[in-house]
Image (tube, rainbow, N blue to C red):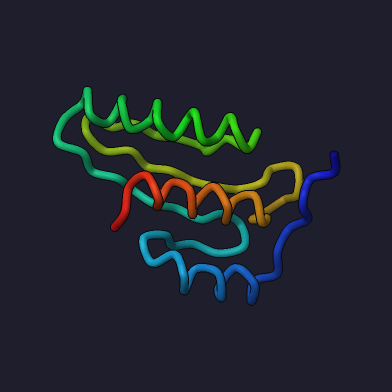
Length: 97
């Protein structure tokens, strides 16, 4: 199945208006989640991993003690695609705000 193409800067900017926890641009979107402690951050990562597997699209993750830093980019497209936006929406469903 073909992967979605890279979105234009305007498309990414428009999408980010509906994803207020996320920032970035056409080269990648980012969100950080601060959890109560390290085990909570690891548990959050596991929850995100199951959603990522469902989409067959995986975030770049940096885990620092109790904070997850997530970056979404479709490397095969060379930037943000609709898959990144869908994963961002699903992460927001898991972790609102």
